[in-house]
Structures are given as C-alpha cells and as structure tokens.
Image (cartoon, rainbow, N blue to C red; front, side, top):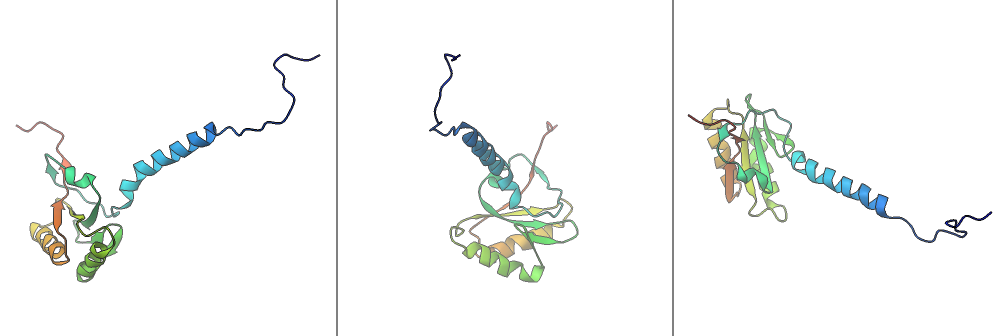
Length: 140
C-alpha cells in the first residue's frame, strides 16, 4: 500500500531555519550582555541627574568606589598606575577621541572625582563625563 504523500529517496536539502533561529538568539544575548562587560565590578552608588546620554556610547570607564578603590573598565588599578593605564587605553587603535566616563560613588569626595577628571585630561582624554543615575521621581 502506497500513501499519496510518501516520498522515496534521499533528502538533498538542509533545513537552515533552526540554525538561523539559534544564531539570532545568540546575537541578541551578545548585544544585551556586551555593554555590561566593560564596567568594573566595584559597587558604586551613582549620583542622580536628569540625563545620561554619555553612557550609551562607546567609552573608557574610570570607576571610583566609596572606599577609594579604582578601576579602568574592568581592570582594578592603583592611584599610581591610573595615568599610565589610561594612556595605554587611549593609545589603542580607535580610542583617540573616545569618551572617558568617571563613575564615582555618590559618597566619594568631590576632590577625588575632580582629581580623576584632571588625570584623564593629563592622560590625553579629549572628552570626559561623569556618570549619573537617571532621576525617576518628579522633582518638587
């Protein structure tokens, strides 16, 4: 007995739809997690502000925790090696006009933040910014 929809022979085409689905999921995961990879794991409580557009572009991040620990992107550094580390990051190909973002804990003294901004300028940073949290409430 032969069924009308039954075919005899070899399958000569590969179904690529499942492969495309898996690839798209991997690309989405990469796009979501990539921005989180460049920031250090130092816990900081950022001050609040109305805007934060500068954090959305490619940048070099300097993180200052409330106890004074420093990190450049994901690399922990000391105050003595901060300038040299920044110079080497800014000297990398494509980083000549990159934005240097200072992510300082809101409890960090302003003098320390100002020193970080000065060190970034001395290391060759053309553009600097201070990271903040987006204000969520209505100001009265």
